[in-house]
Image (tube, rainbow, N blue to C red; front, side, top):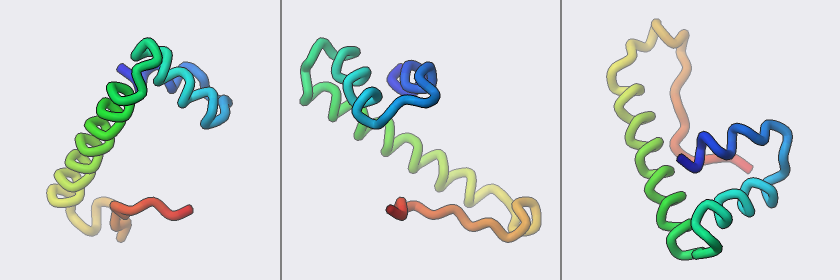
Amino acid sequence: MILAQARQIEQSSYDDRAQLVLDAFAGNALAALNSVIKDADWLCHQLETASENQSFGYVRGLKPKFERED
């Protein structure tokens, strides 16, 4: 739900996206954070599953990273 709404704002800043998430939960920051954490966990699980099921040659040597680099 949140990701779909966030994608609607393609060129928005992180503050705009954060506000979008808070608005989706009527300002309830705890519920918003819980949802974002659950989404991140789910995406990490999907990335792990995909990386286990792809052959090394199929992705031409790409190895997914599970930690973001700032």
